[in-house]
Amino acid sequence: MPPKRSTRVGTSRSVVTPPTAPAAAPADVVATPVAKRTRGSAAAAAAANPDPVSTSPPTKRAKSTPAKKASGGMVSVATTAATPVTGTPSATSTNVTPTTSSATTVNPTTVNPTTVSPTTTTTTASVPTTGAIVADGSMPDIDVVISFDTTGSMGSCINEVRHHVQALIGRLFSELVTLRIGVVAHGDYDHGDMLCKQLDLTDRPATVVGFITATANSGGGCTWPEAYEYVLREVRKMSWRPAAIRALVMIGDSYPHEANDNPFNLDWKFECDELKKMNVAIYAVQCLNSGAAKNLNFYRTIAEKTNGYHIFLDQFSYVRDMLLAVAFRQCGQVRLTAYEQELVARPRGMTQSMRRMFDTMLGRQSAVLDINFDGSTSVTDLRPCPPSKYQVLEVTAAVSIKAFVQSEGLTFKTGKGFYEFTKPEQISAKKEIVLMKTSTGELFEGAAARAIAGITAANEARKVAPGVGALGQYRAFVQSTSVNRKLVAGTGFLYEAEDYGQAE
Image 1 (tube, rainbow, N blue to C red):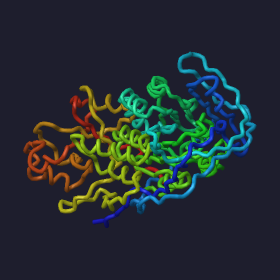
Image 2: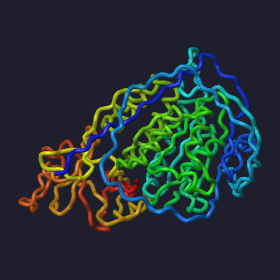
Image 3: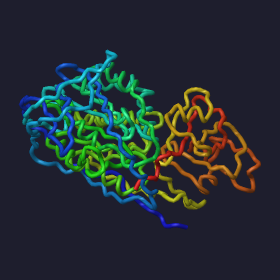
Image 4: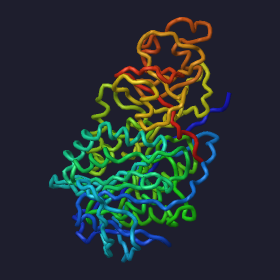
């Protein structure tokens, strides 16, 4: 039996102490020019159009060769308590004379796009990167940009937000009265006009809801890298308020192009350094984590460079809770801790994955996880499989497996889907079974999972009853090889992520 592979989850973060007095209110911060080909700033959109949506047409290029499949276990990442850093860095940008931008700014209420001319601005700002409710009870200005990778299986992440966007955005704006939100949905350079669509920072909930609802996924298969460096550059151009607490939530599963491998010669490390100067803390949200070192290094680095956080989003169904947690973190640890207790009190409690996320943002030590990366469990060796390998989706209406998978923006492949069985039935020993522990959200597969369910070669003719005996602690998902099998409303559906384990 292959040896166990262990991993620590979460990373350390340095917290920047906010200033004791309100920062001065200088002019807006805009981008510093990048090497060779540059694009014009969109910062002036705030004045001419409070809620612009930008779409960035691509430069045609050949797609990068897909990276080789990950060959082994997870990289160990030690988690330690956060260490405070004295002082507050200042954000400075230099004069910019950009070239004509190919990005267009669109008012969501109109049909035809309107091009916004680039501007030149010089600014110096002193801005806190960690929020807190001040002594008089007032709330600091909070600017948060959320960036979604919408390629391949990652399209399911923004789909999950779309399903609950009204409630999510409504709560954010109602509880954080000084909040402004910007959104980026991006693909890669060969995705045509789906390379990058943007909504500048706005305080209008309906505008945010409309953008997220209307913006299509970029699609594409499992190819790497993706245009994260382009997103980092575009985010610098947004109309950040001078004294606001600033955060970029970058959600993805791959790594960026290097400077010699993208049409604009963009260097993602340089872009991060510029965001740090602007006091934009990056919440690096890594999805579909299979232990690939190149991916891990990217998310860890952009968090460390900007005094942000490197967190893992193991299940797309957790994205709503994660976004609320990030927003509440901008108001300080007290507000974030209160939200954590809210989640703990829910009927299903808090999963281990979400607990580790809070541990990271609150500077607590995370436990060492013994994760089985090779799928070789025995009856006596019950270790959870990698938490991102399977995505658990909720079925809201009776529908065939194929139709459901495609409605979630996923690529249907026979045998990759698992239905939740809720009544006694005979289950062939040839079919795979995955168990989710209801108290922790951990996923188990292999021989041990079959043993817990009581499914063996000797008794496969008998019917297995869900919720009975040891199965009472688990949700059970059984592999389906049928295209037309009907899923039952109110049950779960588990799907093996197409992108999982295929990056470097």
